[in-house]
Each structure stands twice: as structure tokens, then as C-alpha cells.
Length: 146
Image (cartoon, helix red, strand yellow):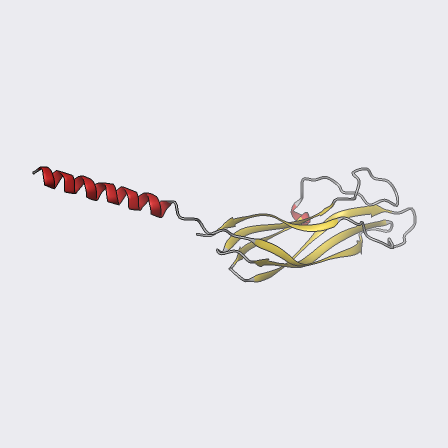
């Protein structure tokens, strides 16, 4: 009878050990990169111009992703409205200032576009000659699909 109890204890121990080893396995990660980005200057009103963005993102991770949010930043823009200088309205993005992609499979690529990365008001109705230096498109967030 002692040997039967020992057998049951050993089997239970082995089952717990197998469960621990299997549960500690590395989870697959999602990874999304921006493969193309372009900034476009658009006239918003007579003396106001806005920079919009468009491009492509690609899922280079090991799992599908969902609710992918892409947005842009102007790191060299100020927060004050000065005629002739690029500025950003605020760092909390509005729905127009980001694009949400509902689902992106592994190795899939998807287009994005959003408006209002940076703004400028000129004293004359002339298109700005240059855009700010530190413009970037970022993947703000996503959820992995398991």
C-alpha cells in the first residue's frame, strides 16, 4: 500500500512539474513598424496650413494584432501660436490626429493616414517653404491576438 501512495505522489508531482514548465514557455510577441511615411502640407484657411501624414505599417511580429493606433509628432514644434512658426495644439491626440487599424495579420501591411500633426499661421497666404525637422510617425499602441 505504501508503494501505491508513493506512485500516486510521484505522478502528481510530475503532472505539477509539467504544468509549470509548459506555463512558463515564452509568449509570442506582436511587433509593428512604420515602413513608409510622408508628410503633406495642406492649406486649412487663407493663412493657415496643416501638416498631415500618410504611409504604411507592417506587422513583423509573431502574432496578429488588433486595435493598432498610429499617430504623429512634431518634436521640434513649439506649443505657442506665433505667426510664421510651426506649433502643435496639444499632446492629447484627437480622433483626426490618429488612425486606428482594427486588425493586422502577421507579415501584413496596411495604409494609414491622419491629419493635424503640426500647424502654422502665416501673416501672408503663402505656403511654407519647409516643414519642421523632427517629424515622426509612431505606433502608439496595439493589442495582440492570441
